[in-house]
Length: 261
Image (tube, rainbow, N blue to C red; front, side, top):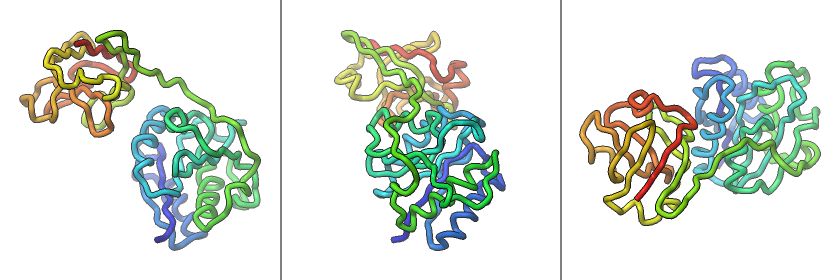
């Protein structure tokens, strides 16, 4: 099976920038398998990109190479890095893009991309995704050892990812991200709720509204009705059946969530 390289960017699905990066990689390794995770990360939204990478990349075969380009600091002194986290490989700017992954699993190896011999001969100040990350990814897919990329680093730049707090029969958390359906995905995992998931008296509060009980599936509630359930990622989410919870509640990332039972 040929090597896999994935791409996650804020370039937009119709962007020529995505195609340029693919062209560079295919020019170096024509048989590589390129997979688009998402190019619809919000512009310069590093937190959104971090969530996308954390949700999607662990499902890939071991050794896959994941390139993330949400890089508002391109051309500045920020580093570009390689990291091995779990059984996956990552190339990204060191701006917090890998911090949610690193919070869940400590990186086994971090390397600064400093060996310019592996980059394109001419490097633009504003497109390091094409000129540095893409050729490095392609060379890794051909078997280049990560030690040749540059010096080892001891840590990544970490963003603050609040953890839910449990006190007795209450858990306080926040909305971590919002999917395209308007579902509010929280940072409260099933493990924090324990047996509360099965208790009919459980109450979920968000943006001044209260939801009684946790559903198993969306269709347990009527169309247009607010509901709460443990989603496919294993986290509590607030949804509106056939609608948008974000729109109904006017709630965004960081909005407080309280679960009591």
